[in-house]
Length: 294
Image (cartoon, rainbow, N blue to C red; front, side, top):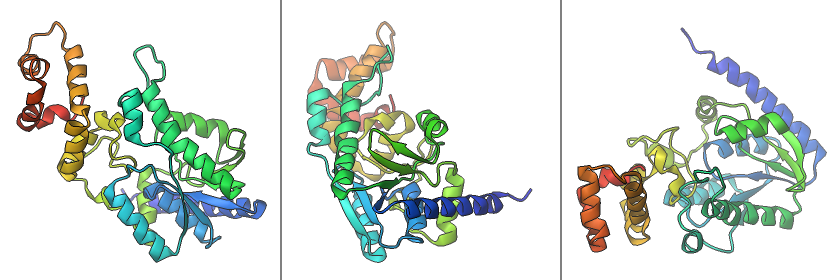
């Protein structure tokens, strides 16, 4: 049975262009938020069809994938972009030192964890809000889609594609809010839009697909993030898991789960880590798959 994707996408492209045109007519200082991932590249392409000189705000957390930095330089030059970098005043590693690794967003009591809250606030929200206010932005285009998380679905139902944010003090527009991942990639192919090379590193799959963002974020361990990192970026994997101590944190979490359960894995961990932490690197080499997921 032939796919109806082209027809469905045609309709969504028309709606997205219409929304972009309407909102641009209402505002004097629009900007596009761009992470240079697959979604925001589509929105950037859409908006530039109507406003070629639109400013681009890139939230540079300082821990983006190496491919992302190379891709940003390439697109900046090829598309002649006016990129404003939103940079944090602290680092991911400072946050880890003060609050621990942001592995879980909430604890067993469903309370927000300090590490994950601080990471998002300090590396993303605060720098972006500061940059937008310095620019005097009155309209903020994003590549948000409702299919990326339950929180975003709820937000989409509550606010829609175009609304005024009291917290951010400007209007927001989400032109591709109802687009699927399949439609995003079809748009890329149809209009020959370049994409971040991170997406091409897909021999090691991740649940939900490869995503850009902070390479060191441990909240994506459950999706296969560390397995992907170990395969494609072994130096970064070693820096995060061994030198910065994420591996030891994972071992402690696993031991906690194994309390009272006799197993060869538990014996190995107790003998190799609790009694002799210096043997951690050896365990890593012998059982790399242990550190792929929690």
